[in-house]
Image (cartoon, rainbow, N blue to C red; front, side, top):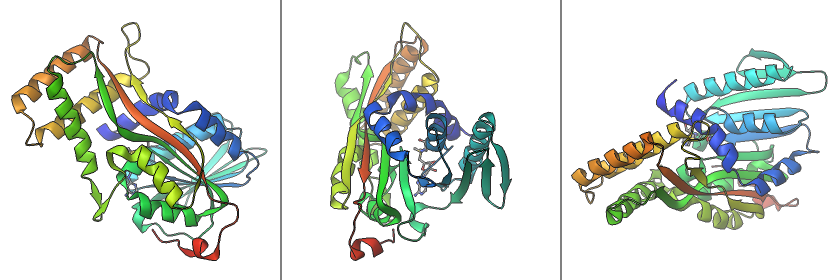
Amino acid sequence: MDAFAQFLQAKYALDQRSLNPVVWRRFLNELSGRTPLDLLDVGTGTGSMFRRILQHYDHGAMRLSGLDIESGLLDIAEKEIIDLLQAKGFAVENGAGRLCAVNDEDRIEFQRVCTPLTDFRSVPNCFDIITAHAFMDLVSLQQTLAGFYSRLKPGGLFYATINYDGETVLFPPYPDSEFEDALLQAYDASMEARRLNGSETGGAKCGRRLYEELLNAGFEIVSYGSSDWNITPCDGAYLDDDHIVLDRLLGWIYSEGRINPSIDLKKLDRWLECRRQQRQKRMLGIIVHQIDVLARKASRVSHEENTAWMF
Ligand SMILES: C[S@@+](CC[C@H](N)C(=O)[O-])C[C@H]1O[C@@H](n2cnc3c(N)ncnc32)[C@H](O)[C@@H]1O
């Protein structure tokens, strides 16, 4: 498994602890009664959102489509979903790019869609639910939300979770706080500078932008709230696999500092050394501010809204 897949797997438990509980419960409540449920997860990675739903929701029939550009990640997603469904007593068949799991009451299908989101084509009004977990900062909000709106059935839901919202704080405070502030600004600036096919992306303030762009796209906001990552030692130990996530975050912050001309490289190396030592001693903490939002497409929509379906 490559380092990025390891990171995704390591953050599964952290994400579950961090999801905003009110928004999550509201999302689960909204699922019930919609059967069969047609669900699209974009940027599915190792399938964390589907695994979470299958673990926590007492489901009926479901058709799950997992979209990602990385086929290696989709391989892992598929294997994890098979393992989970088999552990729940489903008989699983896998053929022709579609996985089908049945038990006495339910039928669950999983289809992998290996394509960039911008190339994804489907008919309008075909999904009950679209989910995007730690993804919206990577794509153009306006364009993507217009595509989601037209693909959702009237009354359909968009659940976007773990959207970074422009604040990363490290503990204990670093003695040269001015340097660390500049470094964290460079880290956020790298996300702000990200472009996809020439368009601005959700970027470092994705959480708050998403709220605004959802309203602009015609969605109603059902529920929202913070889903901050608290990677903080508890009685001298990190929870779950948080230490792996912490190492990756330190590495990414450092890498962005290396390529930013305003960052002093000697100070940067000293910073990494200090923060790594604190991490070894299980003293280092990091809090990352994020936002979850659940939004709904109106139950009655105009013809024009229904036909604007291209990404
Ligand atoms: C931060 S990861 C989140 C993965 C997963 N949702 C999770 O949190 O465990 C973002 C995912 O989006 C995928 N991705 C990035 N840009 C994409 C695009 N334009 N179209 C489809 N997938 C994309 C990546 O391959 C990666 O798996």
